[in-house]
Image (cartoon, rainbow, N blue to C red):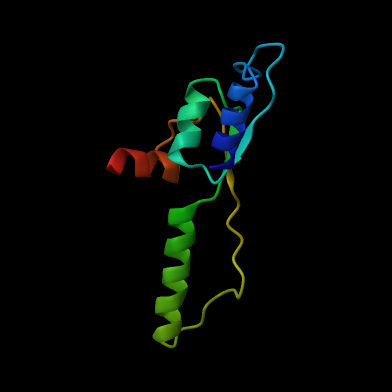
Length: 104
C-alpha cells in the first residue's frame, strides 16, 4: 500500500519513470498486495516483498488445532520467509496477491 503512495507522489512531482528508464527511482513494496502486482506488471514498481498470508494462517491454525487436541506443537516460533515478487514471477499463482485478485 505504501508503494502506491510513493508512486502517486512521484507522479505528482513528474518524477515517475518506468522501470528501465535512466531516471527511474527504485520502488519496493511490502506485503505483495494485488495492487503491487499490477504495478510490477506495468513497470511502475520494481519488486514487492510478499508475506505469505495464506501459509501463515494455515500454519497458525494447524498449530492451534494440535494444541487444542493436546498434541505437541513442534516449534514455539515458526519462520515463514517472505517471497520477493518480481516481473519474472509476478503471475505465480502461489502468491496470495494473485490468489486474492483472481477470487474477486
